[in-house]
Image 1 (cartoon, rainbow, N blue to C red):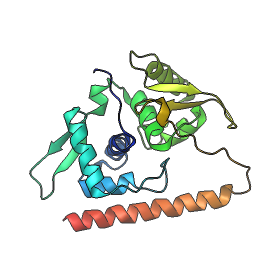
Image 2: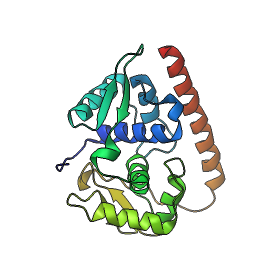
Image 3: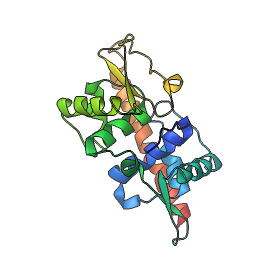
Image 4: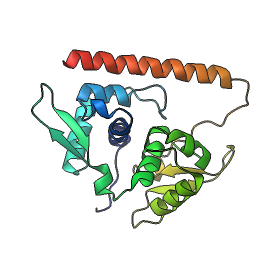
Length: 204
């Protein structure tokens, strides 16, 4: 497809839509409320966002014009599915890697191996490296290699929102807080799951 640049909100919406199509296919296609909950998760997201229903709906209409999503009408509430894989000619690995970068920010190959586990993976490091090379060598490069910048290992970022939109997560200050961070991630994941369940109940 022709070269394009997404806004951070559009990238979050399409990324969350792809993620849920792979991780929870029983709730896909998604309603606006369900997608809003997915976009606003506190865990597995960088940066964390607090999008309103209108912002998600507006982003979906923009993505519809770009032929990156399709609306399904007929249920009580309209539901949305993505056309991201088709439009960008992505295979299973390049799709998982690109969406992980869109949802979680810049990452190393090792981090991508872990963070694609619910995106069709986990994939082997060699497959991830090949996917990153594929995505970087396109007519419109979709990823960029970054410096280490205080992190352990070379990191990669997606370019769908342009280079100026790249937001680096802070480097870890040590191992002391890993246990607390892990417990916090688990709690936030549970809260996000409950919020999504409530949203689905309200839609029915």
